[in-house]
Amino acid sequence: MVEIKKISTEKSDLKKFVKFGIDLYKGNPYFVPPLVIDEIATLNPKENPAFDFCEAEYFMAYKDGRPVGRIAAIINRQVNESSGMKAARFGFVDFIDDEEVSAGLIAAVEDWARNKGMEKVIGPLSFTDLDKEGCLIEGFDELSTMATIYNYPYYQKHIERLGYEKESDWVEFCIPIPDAIPEKHIRIGEIVKKKFGLRVLKYKSRSKLKKDYGRKLFELINDAYKDLYQFSRLTERQIDKYIDEYLNLLDLDLVTLIVDSNDEMVGVGISMPSMSRALQKSRGKFLPFGWIHLLKGLKGKNDRVDLLLVGVRPEYQSKGVNALLFVDLIPQYIKKGYKFAESNPEMETNAKVQNQWEAFNPRQHRRRRSFVKHLK
Image 1: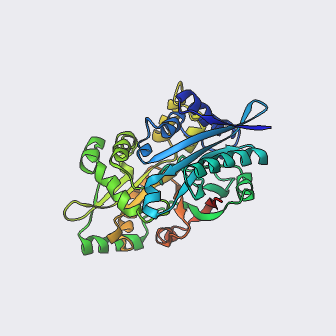
Image 2: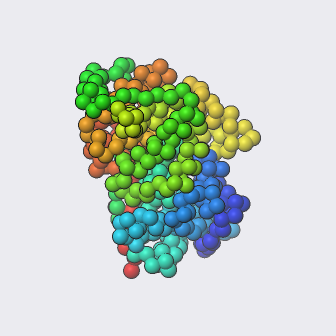
Image 3: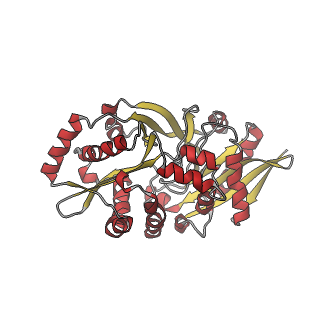
């Protein structure tokens, strides 16, 4: 018999919740574990500023006294208010291949959602659009990335069996790094610079980058991503957190800003070496020795780069600004020995983004899906 238990937000309970999602994939060569301390912080209302506009409940499934599944029930009030929906989300979902387990977990979310006055449930989603989202439905034999969910193939069947239908798909591409900047991009880049008075801006100091453009960078992301599926606008507290925690990790060679004649930011491209193998070796732990693998991942030899954030201000989109990002970043990729770039998830309907990869012979190697069910 399956027992569903509510999990508290005490760090000891959250650690069990996180570790189940790692232990389930022990020995799987494609799963990339999260950094445990980061995942716990994301789930903790005291540490994650998304709880200013979100609420959540966590559940774990037990069978014969051992953990066999987990799930989070989430409501993002900001998205609900802007969209007019009454939707709850399920996320952080993992379970053994047992229909009784998956049914119990989903039922716990649906009951919670009904009690909160919600009319439908969507997932897998997290608190915001910059968190991991989407159930993997293609690409199970591809190495995952630190920014995406990996799950077993049986998840889709379990979710659909419980009455969920396709809501939206994301696609991902593996993009070969060219030996040189394509002439087309050089030509377009020069035209764009002259036409709009744009220039590439690079930094050698993280503190100066944060001071000059840290906040503006995330404000641009808010503007560039505002029309994307289920996007949740970053608040001042979230921006402060991202500036403090993430900008310090970046290799500034891989950060490109595009500014206009008034030094206002028009576009940004942020990438970093793939941390997939490093996280696998660390098993998601920073201590006692995980930090060594993570440092090697950041500083050591790597053939893959993750395209974390690419954003262009709406009034400049589809005008060739991305060419300037490529012209600056491709030589850096070549210099550092990268052979492939990971696009990370893009909406399948986002033709503007996908068209920019055409010149590089991309391979669409993963697809993931969010599901929806209307509650009765």
